[in-house]
Length: 245
Length: 194
Image (tube, rainbow over all chains, first blue to last red; front, side, top):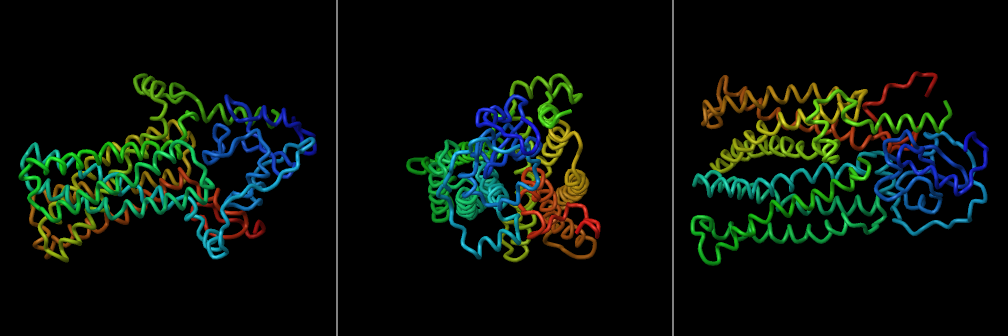
């Protein structure tokens, strides 16, 4: 494998998969590029969905960026006997959105990671301040737990919407384990947080009378921490795939 | 050195084991045992000061607007939470930089400077409100500085988060070359390069 113009077979391409210190090559429209130096191709995996060592011509139709992206990478050869490929079905980006993303590229991947800070911390804080209230009896902890619960309820839908947008735009709505877990648990988290918030809003003294049905309120509040931790855990696996470590 | 060899070297450098970074042995063994910690520890911990600092500003303003006492309490606890988690976030950030970014990019340097400023501002505000718990009820004279400190938390932590986010999701990867968007971290091109 080597210079521009040199023919690279599919077998040779497959060997440059970016794993175990091997170079990471990708093919696009019969040209082979070396993406080894890009942090976005760490471990030969791009955006948790595209693998090095392959002809990505078909997958490129789904990409949120233009083919000018290849100008950043050195071409190391041409693909020998490249099979004809047809574009795969991907998201159709409306012109206004394409214009917006071009003007503000920050919107492509950043909104979800920015927004998720809030429900994660607010949910953890809701549980933690509730425990602090139970331990100390200080009303201000209980009030803070309620305020944090409100913050979580407010931000979960925003985090879910930005997450769905990111999934659609950058992952072509592909289903893989972290996404499936998040798709299932996020509505559960929202339902529980909303139920607890409304309950506490209608019955401000619920925590002062933890008997009978009110125990369920405490149970829901205690569930928020582990639930949001699981969702965040799987979310971080998408951003920082553990196999790369 | 052929291109393949160069690529291999870059990858090996990037994946160098923590031992090679001059880290204490107990941290190295921890990283080997829990490889997630190499890159994920800082993003995990950074969630807390970001949310708590923003909430301290937000709930303080909400208290000043509504005078509902619980908002004042929440603002103070959020400030305390921010002060509590900020050292952990900074320490893990330095560790992440040492392991993953041997040559610190400009955004990392800016993030460190603003984090230091954020630490001073948040700690000052926290101690001040600890000594004078009702300071938000008496915003006159020198106490206005306290309000300024509280208001400064939000832009400071947003700036830290922004430059941190640029490390995880580099903006230049999003933009087709030559058009669209603007990377504030990119060096200004020379006229003859435009």
